Length: 324
Image 1 (tube, rainbow, N blue to C red):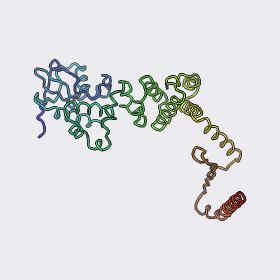
Image 2 (cartoon, one colour; image 1 turned 90 degrees about the vertical axis):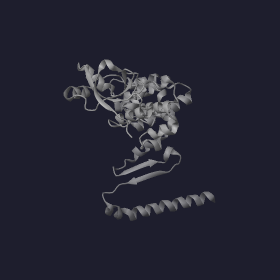
Image 3 (spheres, one colour; image 1 turned 135 degrees about the horizontal axis):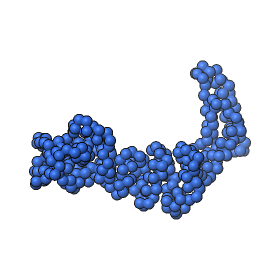
Image 4 (spheres, rainbow, N blue to C red; image 1 turned 30 degrees about the horizontal axis):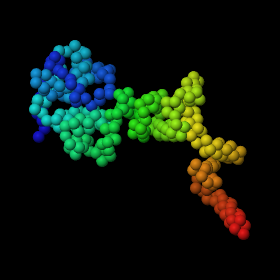
C-alpha cells in the first residue's frame, strides 16, 4: 500500500536539509532560469517531498524548487510530507520516482542512488529498487566506482560530455591524468568514438614510453596543436589524432602514407576506390567500383570478368613456376 503523503504549505524556518537523500551532490546549487521563471509565473506545480524529523522536516527531493520559492520572497512553500515513521525504502521510492519523472537517472545519479539503497538494505533488495530497464545491464561494482571521481568529472559524465566508452577506463588513471583527459575531451568537444580513440592513443603512448598522460599532453608538439590560434576545433582534433597515431604506430603510419601516395599516382576516377588490407598485414588491396545503375554494371561485367580470369591464371602460373 502506498505511503500516506500529506500536501501542505510549510514555513521555511521548519526546513532542514541533511543532504542525506541528495542524488546529485556533484552538481552546484545554481537554479536554472527556466525553473525560476516557471515558479515565478505559476508557482510549484510538482511539490518537493520532505520527511518529518521531530519538529523539523528533512528534504528528500526538490531542493531547487524550494530555493526558487525562497528566492521569490515567499514565507511558505507547497510540499509533500512523509510521516516520521516512513521506512527508508518508502523514502527512496519517492526520491527515485521524483527523479525519473523529470529525466532518466544519469550514471552518477544511479551510483548515488545505489549507494543510498545499499546503506539501508541488502544488495538484492537494492537492485529491485532500480528501474527495470537498468537492472539487466547493471554491474554494481562498476556503477559504484563512479563515486571515486571528483565532482567536476561526475558533472561532465552527468551532462553527457564524457561518454561510457571511456568512463570506466578513466578510473584506471591517476587523478591528474583523469582531469587532463576530461578537460581535453571538453576542449575538443569530442563524440564517443573520438573520445575512445584519443584515450586509447594517449594510454598506449603513455605505457610504451613510461610517461604520464599529463606529461604527454604538455609536450611542445602537442601544445602547439592545442594552442594554435588559427585552427578551429575540428582541425585541432584531426591534427592531434594524426600526430598521436604517427607516434603510436610509426610503421603503420609510414605504410599508409606510402600507400596513399601510390593511389594518387593512379589518378583514379571518382567512381573507383582502392583500400589496403587491415593494418597492412597483407599485400592485398581491394578495388571498389561504383556504377550509375545495375545495367551499367552488367554491361561492363564481361570485360571485368575477363581481366579477373587473366589475373587468376597469371597468379597460378607464377605459383607453379615458383614451386618448380
